[in-house]
Every structure is written in C-alpha cells, then in structure tokens.
Length: 109
Image 1: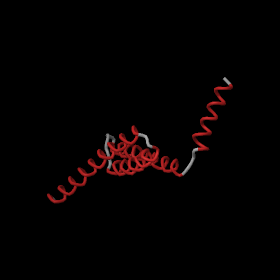
Image 2: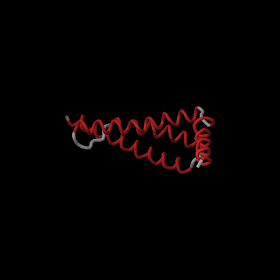
Image 3: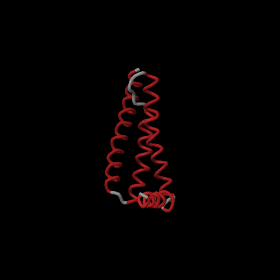
Image 4: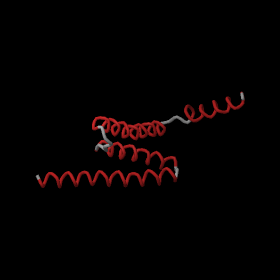
C-alpha cells in the first residue's frame, strides 16, 4: 500500500509540478472557458425555469475549443485534435445561425 501511495504521489508531482509550463496554463485557461459555458447555460436555464442555450454559451465554446485545439496541436494528441476541431465547426455553425436569424428578425420588424 505504501508503494502505491508513493507511486501516485510521484505521478502527481510529475504531472502537476515538473511538467507545469505555459502550455499547461493555456490548457487550464481553455478548460475554464469550457466550464463557463455550462455555468452560463445553467444560470440562464434557472432564470427562465426551462432549458435554454444563451449566445454566451457558444462564445465560451468557441474560446475554449480554440484554445484547447491549440493545446492539443502542441501536445500532438490526434484524438484531442479531431474532437476539438469538429466541435469548433459545430460551435461556429450554431453562432452563424444565431446571427443570421437575428438579422432576419430585425429586417422583418
């Protein structure tokens, strides 16, 4: 049991202390953006008393997705790269629909 604890402590020290650099900071900032999208969605849904998806959700998605893609490219992680790249397409497309529909609604009023 002692050896397991020492191995875990050594692993965590390696990951969170020795390998800590500017790229890790970027990764944490990106993850913060990603987390904020759920926070704004939750707050908006609580206020409306129904499930809603505010525009800020998509902006945080793009910010977090873009930063995580840069991080994944640096880390050369093909699974992470593919996932974030596809996600960015979806986030940008949703924001495009919101903008186009907003313009059409303004033009008809």
